Length: 141
Image (cartoon, rainbow, N blue to C red; front, top):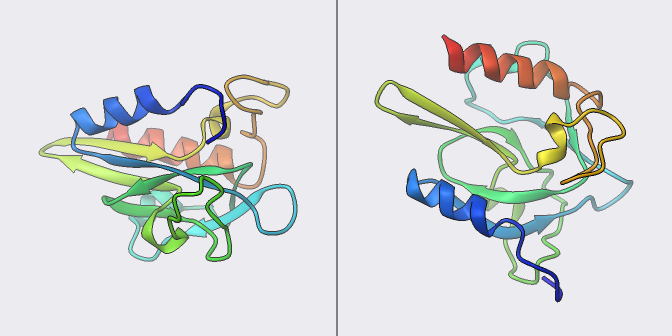
């Protein structure tokens, strides 16, 4: 994880307070400059309508819940902790009674192009915007 701060520590603590497990995995693309990911089997159809591919520079590890977007099987974990992409997901749905939470492994998916912080914005890449709109509609229903 290098010598810098552990950026996701606050996110991991917040998720843990909801019973959601995030891990310090750092999945990166095997080839090319971005992770190209596809819907996971068994995800609710409403969340995947019009979504063929989601794209991100990298991803943290999301464990449990209902996997929505699967990590590419050939994306290695650069954290040094040895997590496998089939043990985690890029995006997952958690349900708590009548409440729902969707967790995604990369903050840049919601940022506009040119946004540099906390990650390069990729809302216009692949079907990211469609997926985010589907998530908002799903969570609001």
